[in-house]
Every structure is written in C-alpha cells, then in structure tokens.
Image 1 (cartoon, helix red, strand yellow):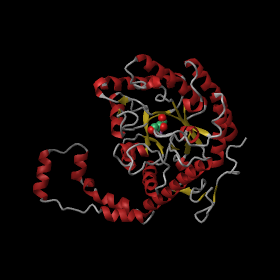
Image 2 (image 1 turned 90 degrees about the vertical axis):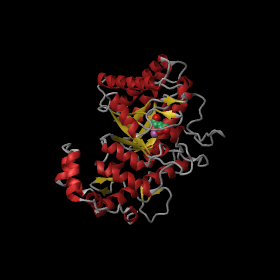
Image 3 (image 1 turned 60 degrees about the vertical axis):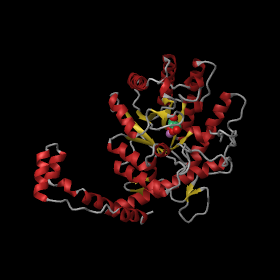
Image 4 (image 1 turned 180 degrees about the horizontal axis):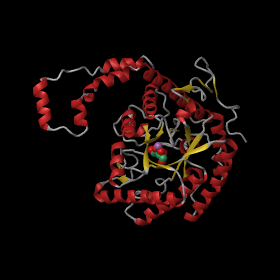
Length: 436
Ligand code: XUL
Ligand code: CO
C-alpha cells in the first residue's frame, strides 16, 4: 500500500524556474559546490519522531495530523506500517539518512523485556527496509523523557532504579543503532535538569549523567561499535533548566568529567535561540572547540519563547550554517537532521513533502551563497586585516604565552595611543546581502 499516492515518483530537481511545488528548485544532489556534491555536504536526515509520529497535539488541543500508517489497533502493526510509510517517504524525497528514538519505532511493552523484544523485532524489519532502499541511519537515540518513570529525569534521577532503567534502555538503543549500521548515537538530556533547586542535588545529578555516558563509552568498546556519540545542548524545556544548556555548558561538562574524547555536539537551531544565542554562535563555539559533530536543522519562531521546531526556510540562516560547515570541511559522521515538525494546521501527508523540500532547498541556497562569500574573499580579508596586529612579533609573543605586564607597558610607552579602526558591521552585513 502506498501512503503517499500523490507523490508518484521521486522528487526531482527542476531548477529555480520551476513552479512545481513537488520539485527541488535549488537542491540538486549531484551538483558540486565547493569541491563536494550537495548531497555529501548536507547528508540530510528525516527525524522519525516528528515526521511519522508527530500528531499535531498541543496543550490546547488534540492531534490534527492525518497519519494513515499510525491507525491499526495493534501497536506492533502500527509500528510496521509506520516503518513502511517512513521508507516510502525517504525514497520519494530522496534523502539518504534517517534518525530515530527507540520508542518512536517500537512501542513500550508490558515490561522492560517486552519493550526490548518489540524493539528488536522492528529493528530487524528496518534493517530489511534499509537493505532494499539503500537508506542509512545517521543516528539513533533512546527516548528517556516520555514515560512517567522519567518524570524526575533519567540518569539524573534521585532514584538509582530509574538510572538503571535508563542505562539498560540505552544499552538496547545502542544495540539497535549498531544493528542498523548507524554512524552516530545522540544523547539529548530530555529531562536531565531540574524543575526546582529546592528538591535537587545539582552536582550529584551532573555526576550521575557523566557516569551514564562513561558506561555508554565502555559498552561501545565492549561490543566493538565504532560510533560517534553526540550530546545535544538545550537550555530548557521540558525542565526549567537543562544541565547541557548550551555549547559552553556542554564543553565544560565534558571537560569536567573527562568525556571530551568521546562526545561531540549535535547543535540544534531552536535550542541555540532558546539559549539566547544565535545558531552561528553555537556552531562557531562548537567548531572552534573541535567538537561540532552534527546538526539538528530547524528554526524557532522569533516571537515565541518555546521550542517550535519549524522547518528552516531562512536563507540567511542556512548561509550562516553553511559558512561554518564549509570552514569545518564538512561533516564526517554527522549530517543535517530535520528535527522539525509541520504546523498543526498542516495536517495532511503532502505537507510533510513541502516542509522537507523547502528545508532542503533553503540549505542548497545557503550552500551556494556561502561558497560565493568565501570565493569573493572580502569577508575573510576583512577579518584577517582586523587581527593583523596579532601576526607581528609582539602579538605572536603574547599568544605564545611569553608576554608580561612589563613588555606591555614598554610597548605602550614606545607606541603611544592605539589607532581605532571601524568594525564595519553595516558594511559587512551589506556584503553578505550581495550574495543572498
Ligand atoms: C528535543 C530534541 C530531541 C533530540 C533527540 O528538543 O531536539 O528530539 O534531538 O532526542
Ligand atoms: Co534535536
């Protein structure tokens, strides 16, 4: 059975003149830009949870979405049907990767063992689908935040019984990811934070989180699973304060608990903005720390202070992202995962295509603009010139750690007042706009 009959063949690139809403206007997978094909730059992935399991429910109303694959009475039948719909969608859209939480793809059973069995059954089915289609797994993860047992957190729970549950669940989610050939595994601390400090031992909870991650490192070595772990910063929601609140907090956490060799970061746009940072800031911070692993591509609403997880459509945003990605030389294990959901009123199946096509086209335009900005060279030259003083013997001496207050004083006495130079922000903003 076809779940997307209106899309009879794979979405094709038709070029910027096309008026076909079911065609790419800019994303041309094999087109080479900045030395690599578009598809290799992006490594697009579809997020199983939003696209196939999202219902459109909000705090004021029930689900609105037509999801004909998620209707059978038997939960395992629904899980199989959903997997069919997912692979039909991946292949028609033309993405190479997908991402999932264990509980997105298989339902909780009556007890832990039954949940594990459900997962194993569906993973076998997904493995077959991957083989048939060539679609691959970008990363897997464990859902440690939906079930009521995790109401006070998973690894950061005051009760070690819940910690044990979370760890056991991660073990099986890692097995599932390995079986599906996943190249990454993500830890988003769903409820790893607090609602109130009045009942919380903050430092102990942070230590508990680190202990779980160390167990995961040990386990991946035990099972010979060559996978890249990611931690995904988010400052709040669902908890008031999440411990891995932004890139800086995550880097501090990883250093404090000796985990920097084992985890990179998965940066999400709407999480960056919730943390009162731009996506550019978070990407820059992670990249310059050598820790940028993967990206959850979405966007927030400028006026809403929660995680709206919208599809990215701003070419300015995608240009900034691609400037960072090009500077990094592209992903190794990571990719652009559309951790984004269609709006509640966009309730039919076609909206899922429009949303992803729009996101992919926005990134294609961002890549092309970013490449032009780099080719043009004026932006880079401006920055190089701005910092030129640090290339002198005096500047280099300070950076090498050989400077002293006495040297600085002598320099000022010899050279007098520093000349001020304009930061030229408006000039640079205009320059960027030349290419967008
Ligand atoms: C939640 C979020 C998650 C993670 C995976 O805000 O981004 O979907 O990406 O658990
Ligand atoms: Co995410």
